[in-house]
Image (cartoon, rainbow, N blue to C red; front, top):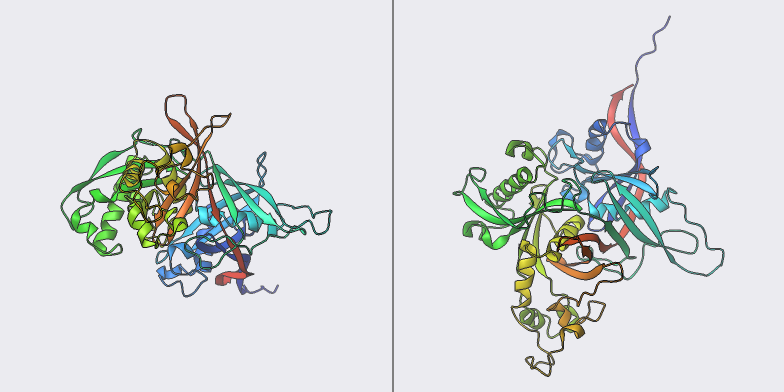
Length: 456
């Protein structure tokens, strides 16, 4: 009896490459991957080009940075009231590892459009010709954090996703159609509590983990909203660190030491050594007081619209051990949550920023006649010059929900987060939801080869 020789073949899976928010990555159907998530590493490392610890990802579709080495795995959901399940995978750059411990809000912004385009969320065609575009809500369950996200996506009269539009986001040159991403009840995504240690701010001691400099302490807020974050008051960093470039060896070592300590304090890792094995969570953010309103107003030549975008806090985020080019979307949720709650590092710095100076009106300093009452400082759209200095006059609705627009400044611009809070029954606040607007674009769809010369 003749023996059929084994053949070598190339395995492939259908994939869609999308730019989602300020990230870019592959969108895959879960049915096209191995049944067990433990078997995902080999094909995803091969597709993205991270095999053999290639930091350039030259042998794959990855872009050699943490924001372009991501995968979204999507499937129909059998959960009541949910359209699709979404699992985020961070594929390491320069290392043969993948991380499924947290969510990526920017990649999530592409899940709604992808689900509609792939027929996972049916959109009925308008029975009336010429009705024009309309919005569709896509309810997404993120399996990494077990949280619900609702995306509002614009579709045309034929049910196709509208990608072109006037909306712009910092970090992306071109405009697009606005996608509203609402993180519902984001607190406790991985730890079960908004403040895992029970404290809104605390000092942590950095010892031998940052061996280049003597031990030191920094003031932090350890918060878990959409993702766990270590929020550091940048002014409490050692002077030597503050004087270094953000990506210098010293800066990177100190940042990673603080992040690992935060992981242990939040209960995400038992030891510093264990925390080093999971680079994706918790994430690290440095915050500082924003520029004074007067200097910002002058910087923009008296432009009231530009001055109105003065951030509540200034942010430097780190992602997978490197400075982030802008700010993670989940970072926006975590930071906005911290700004909204009294006693946190971010809240304190945002309050200090509001007292640093008053914007000029018609080139003149404010006077009692020119200073409006607090109730008149907010125009409801976040566009008032005075709303740059004074937060919105937040008035709860009938359900006790108070809404506030929080602005987070980063190296690429300002991220605006609509933050809904409600009383927690103990004199504090709960985060009902955080809403951030993004854009997304489908770049190409193709078969991606996952394993070369596999024996079958």
